[in-house]
Image 1 (tube, rainbow, N blue to C red):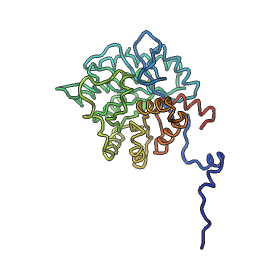
Image 2: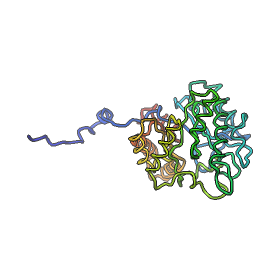
Image 3: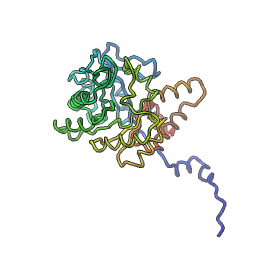
Image 4: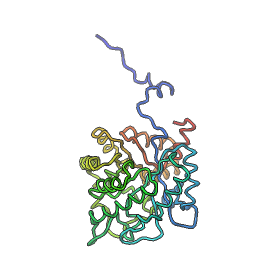
Length: 328
């Protein structure tokens, strides 16, 4: 039996046909917008390493939240920059700390109409810039867990909707889950940075969060970037310890890891399109070498196509506007 000559182009002929058979979608519901809040007199200050992205004061961020909600973006993730740092990052779990009081201010306005996710780590709060407690020039894993559990609990008490540990200490999901449950926060989900790589793409973020390590690097606790099977082990451990959502970070250089995780695990997968990805697109489009809207759309669709359910992205506001204008 002879088959007719197949022409895949038949299904690309018009925009209506292309939309009808499109395999991967991108909606506002997939987006989480990162925000930086800092103890400072100014309402907002543009971040030099990330044009168009700002540090906000606890009061200034409320105007940004109004815009986020007007664009129907469903969730934000907060990073705090305190006015005082010490070796143990004690301001990270202060009930009147930068994140805690900001969450209370935001939730008093938005209630349940906006998901507030809070990053749990110590790098912004420690004088040395590492993600844990230093002993003998290295990060002490188990001592750090004790502090992280206090931070997570303080965020839940302030009203955080989702706790997101990003430190990459072994066992931190288990300790945080046990602490939350013991204190009655059974319903607070954990979104774990499960496969967080020691990437070169974090540079602009470290300027934004003022979290550059003062010595050494983070390669002893963040993942080695040539490894992908190890990512599956990290993700599996976090799921067993109680993670409700797992994350791969960065996104663009790790699409294979996202895809592999999607095939292996039946849990929601988040991907963080990090500051370096944002800056590359911004600078290339500013120079006129690429089209900004098309490049951002292609980048985020590639993350969705790889299997991510949730995308944390600095492009969230622009994408939300385009979606409202039916650009995509």
